[in-house]
Amino acid sequence: MTSHPDIPDASMALDAAGVAADDRRAREADAAWRDDVREGVRHVGDLDSLPLSPAERAAAEAAATRHKVRIPKAYLDLIDWNDPADPIRLQVIPSPDELAEQEGELDDPIADHAFSPVPRLTHRHADRVLLFPTYQCAVYCRFCFRKEQLTSIGRGYTREALDEAFAYIAVHPEIREVILTGGDPLSLPDRALAETRARVEAIQHVRLLRIHTRVPVALPSRVTGGLIQALQGRLMVTVVTHFNHPREITEATDRACRTLRQGGFVLLNQSVLLKGVNDTVEVLEELCRELMYRLGVKPYYLHHGDLVRGMAHRRTTIAEGQALVSALRARLSGICNPVYVLDLPDGGGKVPLGPSHLEAREGETWRIRGLDGAVRGYGELVGEGGTRSRRPSQPTLVT
Image (cartoon, rainbow, N blue to C red; front, side):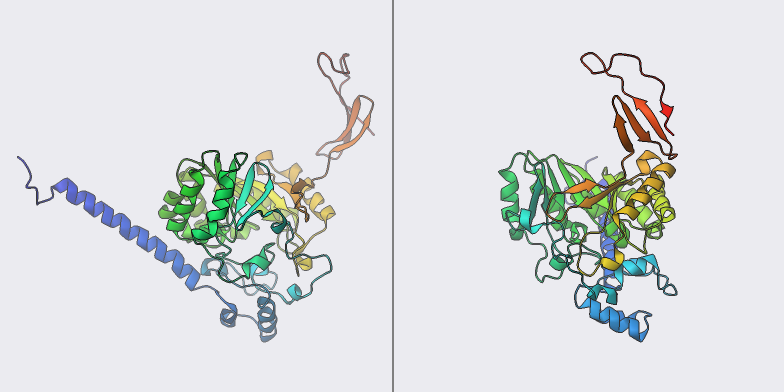
C-alpha cells in the first residue's frame, strides 16, 4: 500500500508534532528568562520597589548614577533583606561607599585599552584574545573591573561591530583561543551567539572557544537547549562561571551547570575575593567544595580585588588573601583549590599570589614548609649530569 502524495503518513505527522512541541518548549524557555530580566531591577527607578530605608534608597540611587544597576529577579530573590550584610545584597545593591574614590584607582584596571589593536578585541597574550560581542550584562556587579565600559550607550551586539576583530584574528595564526567576554556574552540571543561561534570556528587556527559569564549564577533560566545548540560546533568550548558565595548555589544554578556539562562543555569558575562577602576560610571552603562536588565546576581563579574606582571598601589586603588560600590548601582537595591571582594594572597579566612553601635553600637541601606548618629539609636527587649523585638522606624536620 502506498500513501497518497498529498496526505502525510503517520510518521510524518508524528515528526511534525514533535517539532511543534520542541518549538513550544523553546519559546517557553526563552519567555522564562526574559521574564526573569523584566521582573527584576533594570534601572535606578526600580530601586524604589526594594525594601530599603529612605536613607539607603537615597544613597543607592546616588551610587547608581555612577554605575548601572541591573539585577534579574532570580538573583534578587536570593537576598535576605533583614540582613544589611547579606552577601548577595553587597554584590549588586549600590552603596554610598562607591562614591569615595581613592587616588590610584583606575577606569581601566587591567589595561584592556592599551592592548586593544582594533575595536572589541584585546590581545594581551600571544595565543589568545578577548572578544567583546557586547558590553551589556544580565547583572551589573558593583565591583566590576569593566564598569566604566558598561556605562557606555549603544555598545550591544551587531555583526558589523565585530568585523575588524574577526579580521584581526584571521591574520594572526598564533591565536589558538578566543575568549568571549564583555559584558556578558550569554546575555545575547541564541542567534547572535550562534553567529559569533560560527565566525570564530571558521578561522581554522583557532582551537578553543572560552566564554566568561555570570549568567549561570544570576540568570540560570537563560541556560536553555537553544543556548547549548548555539555554542556547539567544531571547537572545544570552556565556560568560565563566576560564583562568589555558596548562597549563589541553588537548585536553579545546579540545573544550569548540569545542562552545560551535558552539552559537552568544560566548566571552570573564577571568584573575586571581596571583603564582607567571601573573605573567610569557612565561606571559601564551602564555595569551592560545592562548586566541584555539586556543580562539577572546577575552582579556577580567586582574583584579588582590582583597583576599580570606589571599591576600596570591598578589597582585602594581599596578606589576608594569602592567609586564606594557605588555609584552604590544608582543608581542600587539590581539584577544589583555586589559584589566587592578581591581574596587574599595567597589563602584565594574572600572576599567582599564593604563599610560597619554599623557605630557604642550604646547598643541596631545600627548607620547605608543609601544610602542617612544620619546616622540613628536603635533599634533591637528580640523574646523570646533575649536581647530586649520592643517595639523599631522609627528609628531616628542621627546628
